[in-house]
Length: 200
Ligand SMILES: C[S@@+](CC[C@H](N)C(=O)[O-])C[C@H]1O[C@@H](n2cnc3c(N)ncnc32)[C@H](O)[C@@H]1O
Image (cartoon, rainbow, N blue to C red; front, side):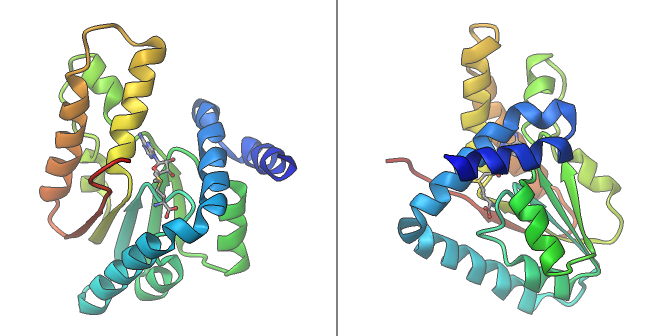
């Protein structure tokens, strides 16, 4: 409880105001990951190995982007930072512990961006949903890893609909999932999709 409070307090000032409401769920994820580390270990090891294998097979390594970088448990960020000129980590929130780890490892060419990758607001407004369109502006992009984000896009959107969204909009959930997959498929670079496919 105390460590969660410290994590929250240290993350708050480093987080833009618009993303502060999401700090709580990132801290909960951090807590859960510590509690369930044994159960999650195999999945995390598989993810790390899959991305590392991809790196080994890539010739051009200028810029890599990780979508849903979170706690950096399932992406080999040190290896990526060594392999690429620039690594961009995108998530709603970057916890203080994650920032500290990057500093401690002196990973200077790793950039952090806070961004909602769901497309929820656009979908709700009836606009075209292209949550990954911003990646077109990233120069020399060679690799994009979607790091166990896909199901969370659906979970987060469902929560927001239940909390304060209009009723009768449940059809935007599959729309957001499709938009993520289509966005990844349309990228002119290597892509990795790490995702859970079931829930128990
Ligand atoms: C299951 S965790 C992935 C963990 C992470 N890849 C790691 O290695 O620890 C999902 C991550 O996606 C982020 N996320 C969920 N919804 C998001 C959204 N709409 N936009 C950006 N990131 C989101 C969460 O904050 C969380 O860090």
